[in-house]
Image (cartoon, rainbow, N blue to C red; front, top):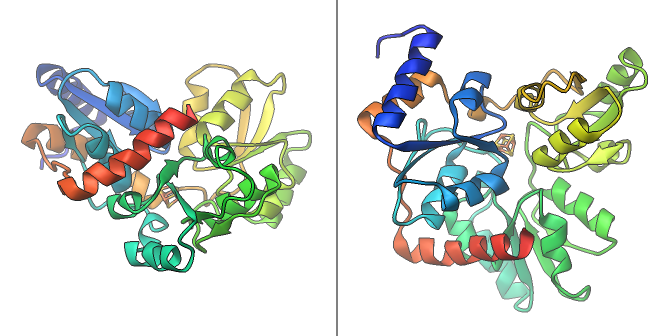
Length: 307
Ligand code: SF4
């Protein structure tokens, strides 16, 4: 593929997506230029809803594999393209359907709540999905005495359980990007930026959440920063959120809690790959129908209960 300069690439993508009526949905953790050419930018919850509501019959998902899969699960009549099918999420891949079924066998009355950061096979053996935007709301739908197995993010499970004051069983995995931020990283930034408010994603460890002025999903953090009267913030989530906030021209000073808050899988998607994808109409993401139907039930339930 011939390397074109960024402006040419952007123009070529804009022309071709218009000509082919392709709707681009991007995650907040995408590169800045990708956020800028997308028709919709959001977190994994709003991306799933946007896929369902998208106009036309072709969606390109600029995000990791489970995000494109969620679009394919929810929109069986649409073509879903991924510009980089190898962009994946190590946390999503850390659990197998066999792990879930083994738990279910031991705890037949349990409810399996799976984070959307899971492959289709895991959603298919789950009772309901959730995202960091709606995990509390989804879990609160079930009576206090319900045994809930929350998979696969242990930090999100522990943080939500603490907030709701209830016990959750959970699978012990984590996001390597959010979990790597330490208390020491934060303290260093707080010393450098005294008076800054601290907003944290619940995929970070509970010791960081305990120090936060606000804890919420990426969309929640953006909303918190934009609506807060404060003007200086330290943020613990992936660095792509900074561009998403700056686009609102709200004149906020933003600092990441750690310089390591960068997801290489999210950043493996580039403008070149998006152009190639819509030129060649590749890679089309499909989910076997027997899995798709069961996974769709868990995702649809999340959208119905969690909005
Ligand atoms: S930021 Fe973490 S949870 Fe999100 S895709 Fe990257 S590794 Fe997975």
